[in-house]
Image (cartoon, rainbow, N blue to C red):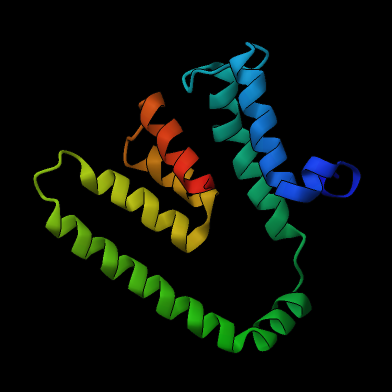
Length: 144
C-alpha cells in the first residue's frame, strides 16, 4: 500500500515505512517498547505461528510442484549460499572465542542471511538473546 500511494513508500519500500512508523509509535509511547510486554508475548506465541500455518495452508500441491520445477537452479544456489553462510559463521565464531556469547549473535545473523528477519527474531528468542538494547541494535543493523 505505502509503495503505491506515498512518495516515501515508493522511495524506501513499504517494509521500511512500516518499520519507521513502528519505531515512531514506540518512541511516542503509542506502541509498547518492552519485549516483555504482553502484546509482544501474544504476537510471538500466537499470531506468528498462526500466520505461518495460514501461509502454508494456502499452498496446494500443483503450486508447490510448479514452483520447485521452475526454481531448480535457484534452489541449488540458495543451498550453496546457505552452506557458505553457516561455514563462515562457524569460522568467525572460532576467531572471536573470547567474546562472551558471540555465538548467539552469530547464530542470529546467520539465520537472517539464510531465512530473513523473521528467522533472525525466532533464533534470537531460541538462543535466549532477549536484552532489548541488543535486539534493537541487531534488528537495526539487519534493516540497513
